[in-house]
Image (spheres, rainbow, N blue to C red):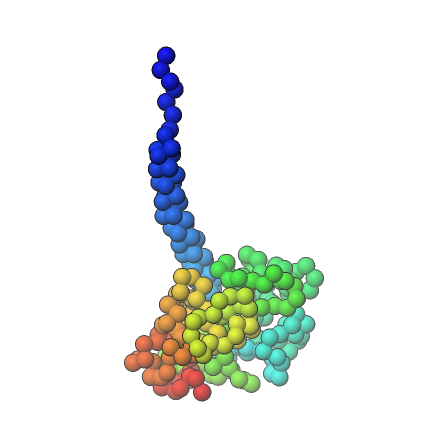
Length: 253
């Protein structure tokens, strides 16, 4: 009676090697597909933020929302967000125009965790949120601080709205900064600039422009070699984003 067929050690090692090779090819492909899906989801969400901004300009008779209440800290607490002085700050006025909750509605009790959940304007699936979600709010997207000040600039003065940043994906404390010398700390504050831009999707991140549209851009199209904005003029610098009302102004001053 013939002996039952069996694998030799060599054949077993060949099979294991093939399985390992297939896994090595499959895992990066799956990870790439997941990253792509996250970027598309975030692009759609931030596109809504751009549309809400355009609607707000109509309602406010041409005024941009504020980045923060006058005299407040750069990184607001939950109490700060609930303050009546934030009634014209972007994180409270824009989400309701998309049918979503304003930031202040998440500021108490168990609601704070929902600030970082799907269905919130402030949730981006590619962002690395802190383990302690209730200590203080952090923002994965921020308004362009170069258009702000005690009073936001008049949008009419923006010379190239289709290339001027209104919102950018901004780094959170646990996220990896770009390997550039002038990058600022990632604080998750609700207003930012090129120096806090984060590339969450294989070296890319999202910018919402002043005409309301959003784009996924390579980090080097947003941030210059210094870790800050590309110097003006934008047409010859290599960057695709303008930060100030005048494209020829130095955005890094």
